[in-house]
Image (cartoon, rainbow, N blue to C red; front, side, top):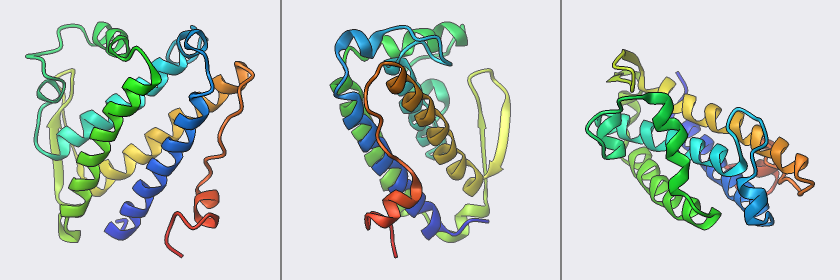
Length: 182
């Protein structure tokens, strides 16, 4: 099991890296931000929206909400259509950033309330496909940070393909800059 203090540090890193990447994305034109690039998600906007959506859904699961409740829908009739439409509500980087700050508050609030002994308790939920899943809570918390890092790498590639500078978001860079505990 990963200790709670380490998980909290990983989330500090996660949001530091996110902020650096959002700053890098701010240099894009609106056309570049929305340009289909042929990655896992069509554009920089869509990739960022996916990362945000994943944090949102996991934050809801940690609080006992269904995925549909988290997104404010009765049910998701067609998951692929839902995934395709989700990014369309984010007309700009600023809109994504604003929504993400609210999700960050929820996540940090949850981490602040969490007690070490709860990390081993199972987190059981039904996903969008109606499948029941269960993991120790610490694994679900760790998954989110890894998932975000994976997709940040995709955003970095998209930025480079757009000839735009990418932020350096390595964990040890955050540590060297004093962002993380020494």
